[in-house]
Amino acid sequence: MMLSLRKAAEQGSAVIVVTHSMVNIDQADSVLALTHRGRPAFFGPPAGLLEAFAATSYAEVMDKLRRDTVTAT
Image 1 (cartoon, rainbow, N blue to C red):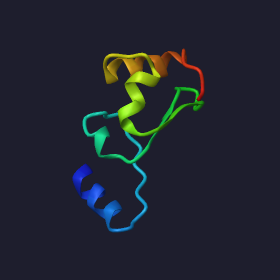
Image 2 (cartoon, rainbow, N blue to C red):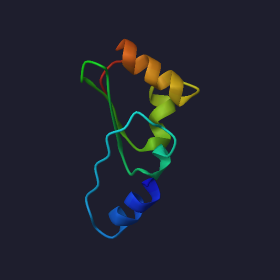
Image 3 (spheres, rainbow, N blue to C red):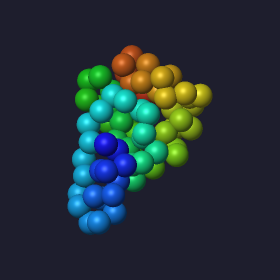
């Protein structure tokens, strides 16, 4: 599914995906990560996500978002 959405974006369509799955996050141009309270915690390319959260895995990022222990950037 994500590859199909990536192709649609490359053809000029605006694509917005809301998901908790991080499996194909690298297919996105940009990621907006929100805490469980809806506060913005990250916006940028997927490659910067782990570094922004000082995390070693996407699971760790999700835990920090659930605990709302991140600072909005």
